[in-house]
Image 1 (spheres, helix red, strand yellow):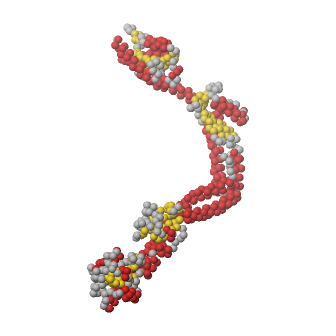
Image 2 (cartoon, rainbow, N blue to C red):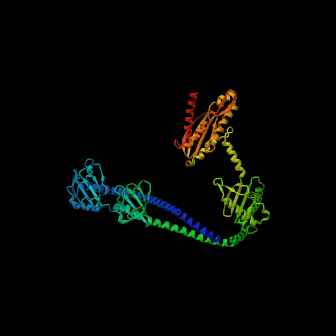
Length: 637
């Protein structure tokens, strides 16, 4: 890895941290600004919808008042004409008189109906003969034929014949001879309705140019008022595309006529209020705010880096150079304390720790060498330190290697001599797993040593385990032998078999033989256990003599023996040895005056590999055959 100056690393590190900060802050800023703007849009929409609903309510109240006043004026005009007819004593007037009266009363039409509900006179002869059954507009007044106390005023409706907005009112003359109907064109009321229409309300709302505001008919979804004049009368939405509720709800960044908008809706009375914000303007505001954040961060970063470079140059570089000079002396092998005054608390603490470490190293070297030299365990130590350019070893190492002339040799020659012996030992590996090597000298030694390599040194830890191995081998051998017969015990027999069967190709012809001593109980009962032990030992000695060249004999326990013969080149040779074992039976064990006692045992065997290759199976088969032989021998007695 390429080394770099602190003056470069720290500013670069600060720059990297600032870059990471920007990478982190930009999405966070985007999310926050996005939330703020959407919340602002929602709040503005709620406020706008609230103002709009207040205006709609106020306009509706004014229209209701205006409509009621106009109805009352129509009724009053009809009552006035009826009163006039009563004064002049007529039930109706001719056309010219009707027009003259209409002009005086400031009404547009006067119609006189007879008691059957038929127009018999008035200002418009073209309507003469019409009745209350002559269309929906006329039927409104039909109830007056059945109740002469009624005074009716129709809502503003288009005049069917002339296609203009009219409001009609009718009353009975007091004598019940005629119904007077007047018609007035609600010019002022229509002007008020136009001024109070939803379109005028929308036109009067303060609105920015980045988006639209629509009012939709709740049933047809037709736009009945909008800040986009060309949108009025069109149907741009359906309920699946634009759901609404009684609360202000938003749909963020949806496509509308090829552009993206944030859309907010609310149901009110028979309409749906829709506010649309241009997403492009939304993103433009986000980019502007992000740009401001980046600008502030970059300006702060430049200032921080400049101050940092100045401080590094003035305070850090010089002191570090002094400390590095002292550390180079340590590298060359000098372990004296560092004496540098930096004036910086952290550097002073660092130097204090370094000096403590140097003192610890000096003491530990001294204690370690003393401990190794005084230890009763033959442990040698050798280190070649590339950092200190020195080598270290203890006197135990010299004793292990049998170096007696160390007092007259220079340190350099001793180093070369020790390294040579180590290289020689590494060629004589005895056990890879236990790291045991053989050292050939006046008396061969077995050494266990570990090589430790690090970036500063190569160290060897060497232990003379010759005596330990001898004792361990002796203990292992004793643990595998039967104390009475000196044959292998069960454990030793099985361990030996495991070892043999690891390389079955080298076994040749073999046989697993199981034996069981006969008559042991009789000898024990007659002559005592001492004589029984002699009997068992005599069988063991005989078996050992037969198998010493081609097999292993063991006493598994009690009066049970096991043998495994191997290494025969032919079955015939193997069978001759088996017969020799069988011939052991009958040999004299103890002679008395009147009788002699012979060695007797039951025997079973199985041939390897013809009858099996797994020694566990071979033992089981041979044991079964031994019991068969025991039964046969008992039956012959």
